[in-house]
Image (cartoon, rainbow, N blue to C red; front, side, top):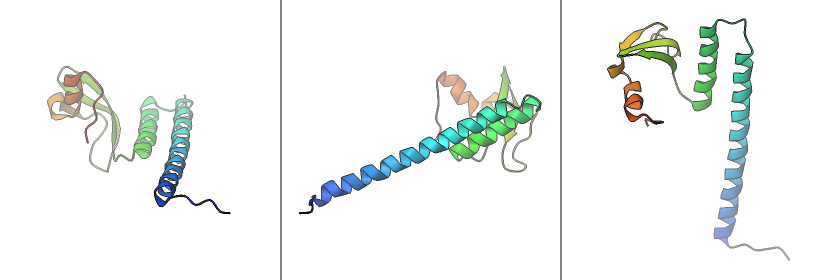
Length: 116
């Protein structure tokens, strides 16, 4: 005799299975990204700025972001050390006032900050 589950329970079971599959997929994606970052850090013959750029590409791909920046802040001076971005958007070595960047929000909050 086949087991009959109420429709609601069956829906929860299917949803639970789908969530489990997504989590497994996300875990594999994270593992691949971490392995790629490990490979980048092993490239000791590479220019440090190029290593940063490769790491930024991996992070942007993993997070689905169009750009990533490593910056240096000295007082009010914000310098783009290395970046990946759409063509013509940013360049290494550019300088801005910190007040014109999102970093000022992080500096003011003195905590982790997510900007939706």
